[in-house]
Length: 93
Picture 1 (cartoon, rainbow, N blue to C red):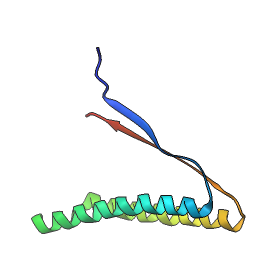
Picture 2: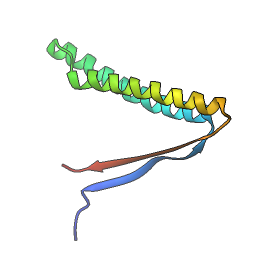
Picture 3: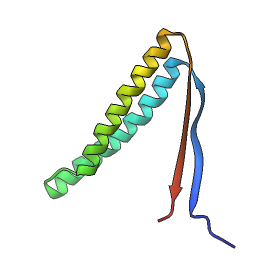
Picture 4: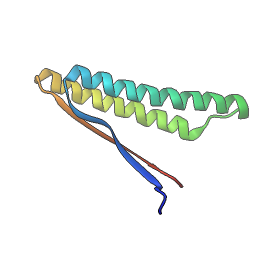
C-alpha cells in the first residue's frame, strides 16, 4: 500500500459572465492579499521588520488582479463570457 503525497483538485472550473468572473477572481485574490497582509503585520509586531515574502506576494497578487480586471472589462465591453480554470495542487514535502 502506498501513501498519497500529492492531491490535485479543480478549485474553479467553468464559463462565467464578466460580472461573475470579476466577483470570483477578486474574492479569491482579496483573501490571498488579506492572508499575506496579516502574516506581514504579525511578523512586524513580533520581529520589528517586514516579512518580505508576504510583501512581495501582495504586490504580485495586486498586479494579477489589475490584469484580470482589464481582461474582464474587455470581455464585458464585447459582450463575451470568460472561462476560468484553476487547479490546486497540494504536496507533502
